[in-house]
Length: 479
Ligand code: BES
Ligand code: MG
Ligand code: ZN
Image (spheres, rainbow, N blue to C red):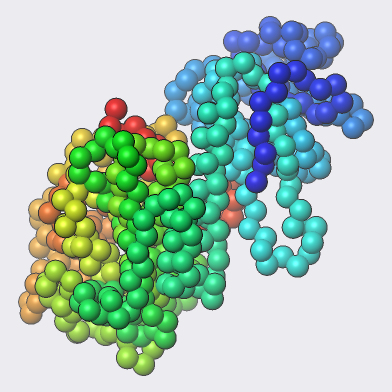
């Protein structure tokens, strides 16, 4: 993890980066640059969108980024995040491990830049025996700026550390993160931050008749878990809790409806929802967010072992609903349904789930955002959309018309676990909503949680997408 601190003066011998917006270009001369360097920058800059300069003074680099955007809108801020990520890459390439920073930009834009830099510094190299890669590419960022506070930097660090944990949990293969170790990892985060945590084992899940979780687990040699976390700060603003539910399929083979071709490749990421929700709570607890939150984490792998559940099975769920299984690969909704029904007892003001639920969500909007549906939560989702723009983890709300309810009607049971060939991300949401009686938002993160293309501050593989969104939402929604 990068160490970030605030400094009062710039040290002569260490490398520096200056970020400057167009408006402040004349102030560059007041920084550490020579007159000639300033003139050179102004000339080169002319009408370009942004320009990067690098002055190499032997062992000291002076990097300058001049950015056209002076504004404070969310698209501008994202440009700063991406520039921060680019800068991290540059430091990595030039073996710069220590960097001082001067900002001639809006404070919020500076925060974006730092955020991009630290998010991009993530490496998952637990399995690289080449020790060169085990060395962190970057160590220290010293910010010389009068506006930025220690609280700003602490917040950035805590949210980054939560995102980092989220990415790690997702990137670990199922041989390391199974239902039991996922629960243990969640408990470790709870213990570290003083949250209550209870882990149900298979016997308890059987006793409570969580039929959905047990059905999906039937083909597996590993037992399932159901984890309950409670964060209840002494002073909380909500009289009724917010419940976060995360899909914890630690590996999705599809079950007997086995995934073919390369569709199974990244399915260790199918517990991303659980990782996102658990690390969101971890961040909220560390930030002392004044909100009462409960986290529910059903977990199992989905395998086609001997006694695996099969198409045609009728599963009696936790709340008594009978579900006709028409596809064992629609397993996420089976385990989430039990958790959502369980959530009713809390009389929640809002329940949000995050799940890598459907390929349909991924196909609909690609890797650029979360597909969401909601029921009785119009106000909350509007707030969440605003938060999404702010942190650039955007949400596309899909319709939740009543006609879609018909898609999951079953001839022989109450409902079936998959609908028509169209609108798969919506009918999956309809299935889940069947088990709710409270304001509800469903976030399908199948398109965003994992990537095979390195892009700016999202490294390869797990992105941690959703953590920054939900921390922002939970920190601001009550204001
Ligand atoms: N875990 C998958 C969804 C998924 C797909 C996540 C791609 C990430 C990337 C989920 O369990 C699944 O298999 N969904 C099926 C549902 C279908 C059988 C109704 C799908 O989307 O094909
Ligand atoms: Mg599946
Ligand atoms: Zn799945």
